[in-house]
Image (cartoon, rainbow, N blue to C red; front, side, top):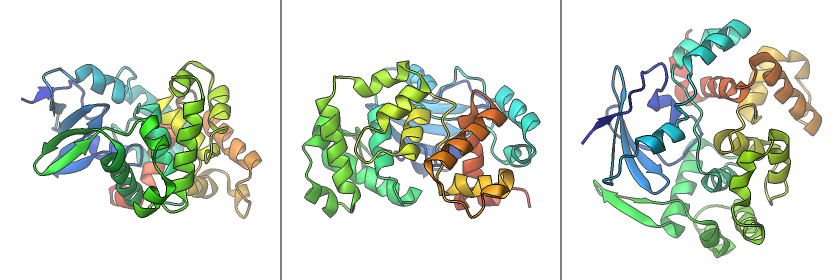
Length: 296
């Protein structure tokens, strides 16, 4: 049975929010319909002209789970209006991307998904994350011939071998996935989740003490799972956006630690407390998959 999430399109558009590189667990299953896994729930979403409908493979109502996942407690339209006033380029691309929200994913899923992202693109990251779930995750349900799995636990990933991950196509990322999982097991329980309750600076620094985690992955985890809306992940797309539209004086420069921090501070000064959310819209606008949405 379909239920209404009671959220208008200007507050949530699934087709951009689910496929702009924040999560890699969703697939299209029909026109304006998508199915994926949030926690231990297999959920189907349907975008209508006035709302988002949902149904789940469980008798429990997953509305609270989806409200948290999409951070619906934060009104999006006023933020868009604020960012449009602050920045002419944002005002130009924003109408093509209404309702693009930042997700609040599980920190373990977020960390290991982005450990797969190094020198990678969204389609291949999606395949790697799905392979990880199929090999090490708990089976949840089969729908229309597709089996859905929970994201693996840290324990399951720590028990994996680099050889197994190489066979799954992880390449050099196999080592850091296993090393990071084993390192997390050595830390106190819930160490990763507790980073939600410390400052952005402290959380970012703590994440970079894990194998394979540099500034960009740390900022992805801070923004997408640790409640740090000011975090600015600077990848190739964002680096090009900054040079093209904001800081042309950086052209020809290398993205050193100092320049990385400079880019983050620029976004935070320009867009404010939720700078990472604004950055997410600009990032999506630079993806080839969404380029046709942009005005000429």
